Length: 359
Image 1: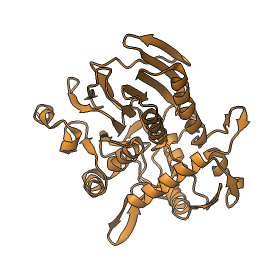
Image 2: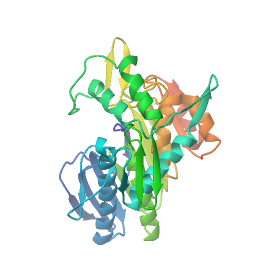
Image 3: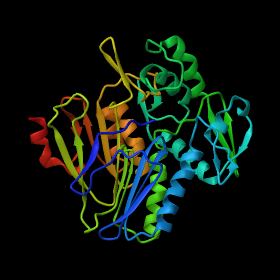
Image 4: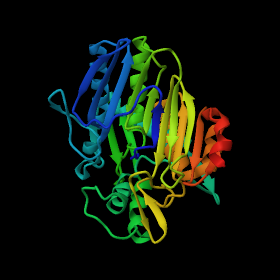
């Protein structure tokens, strides 16, 4: 799962912390704004110029569908009907059984498996992956340590090798088999797509907006996942990375984004410092470690789903992972360690900010 990022949008509008179930209004320039709290565990705001209320409703319905399908922790229903979602797939009783799923969930799972393959690397002759969709049980255990708001029973010390080894074995020996509209989970590893579920839903939202010919829009999914069209005047939005957790309170790094997505992973909320080390909910599939080596990673690219995955992967793998993946994907990135910029590339569009930020 991702944490709320430290992204804000400057000049265009102020992000709100409204927790109403739903609010909507028509403001100048025929711009419709609506918010819903609880989708993907956060507050989602959509702002579109020139959209109808029906189009806004369609967008939220789309997001609600993916929220329900990718929920790994709760049984869910859609349109009054109970559905087979990740929770269903992960039930112990369903290990090795064919489960009929919605084609949308199948597409999500296939994307997760593709990203697992795309983020492999070798170390000392052994192949690992920075991303593994079967990491659910390990992530859940770490949340018991790092997340004070977790519903799970709390633990007082970091997970040990004794605890992690069997969970890693389960993760590494699990696979999915697809047969038409059914999927089988082979093994005890639990599927968790929290690292990109919002981004994948925003990818589908982008497709819908494109089909409807809508260009002036912004979707803020808890600020860790942003989908940006253009402003009402046709300009780029200005995105600001402000005061990462341990940084200068006055620090503000800005960059433009237009018809792009921004994904961010970091330790702004779900983390715990223990004996001088910082632990987070972002887990390394290599060894099950949740020790954080960076504060914030932000990604800018054309695909919201890819932005979400890359921010997680580079949070774990740093510059090495960024360099490797830059050979395949087109994206801008910045890695922040809490006091300084570790790495950044020109595609983020903030080169002119580096001197000031590093001073």
